[in-house]
Length: 381
Image 1: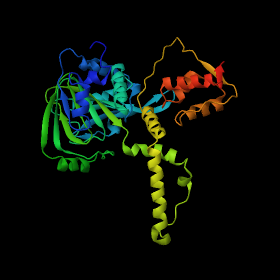
Image 2 (image 1 turned 45 degrees about the vertical axis):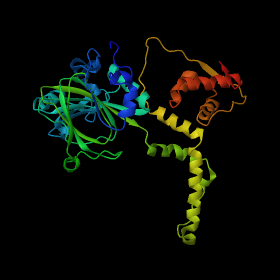
Image 3 (image 1 turned 90 degrees about the vertical axis):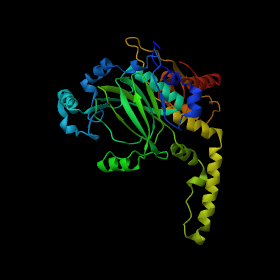
Image 4 (image 1 turned 180 degrees about the vertical axis):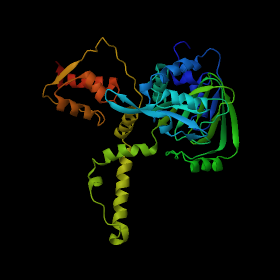
């Protein structure tokens, strides 16, 4: 796989995408030992990781963490104030970080999705495959030292072991669709210890191996033989709760949802009960419409990872249009804000519009402009 992992299918190989969707996604963990010559371990080598760490200005106390005995090292023990041309900033102190690493601490590099091109490409593929927000963290640990105690995550996880080995212990307990991460306190660690249940499986992750964990699965990991490096992708699709903000926007367009509610004690609550029943029926009607499905899809696309694509010194041309004063064509509610924006701008570029309306694909924006052009509402400048 010389070009690296470009799709979810590449990551899962030799497990097929159909098999993953049917048997594992959201259901149970999956360990995929590294087949020969897939190049999965090339996602992040020691050299590449060291190169990232050496760019000291990239890191903060929030993005570069040290873990020791399952607890976070306080930032004031490994960070210092650095004077920059724009004033003082607090950054990890490389020499201090190395002292802690020499003493057995583990290093966690958060939010690396856009720092390394192979990591970015796979993150974008995961975002598209799951219509999800994607995060990527790197974990560097050493023999016999555990960075985190037993815990569960509030998102699905894909782990790629890129260097060394690590033993993952999975437990019987699984939290029911958790959405809020417990705080990393001593009391939380004790809670996880009490509730994790019996060991369900122990998996040795070797270079190039992949591990999938649905959210809520209790687990911990330990490097047992030398240094270990792995990258974890956090995959967070929309939940039913996520659509409430979308529903709020559409419901606010209905007069009934802008009306006052009756007092709860009026006529023994009968009036309020009747009003709520009517609102429930209206909500059901909204959610059954194609417009609502489109709005949810647009909200999903808004969360997908997008990487930069600069081509300097070559500058990308602007395709400029202007309005003519003629009426715009009728389109779906999801696309209508694009026309409202055009009317307010009067003169605009297609490229600016694509950047502004990230919830729409470039093809959707171009199609909307084509319709407006055909209707005579806009014309090339």
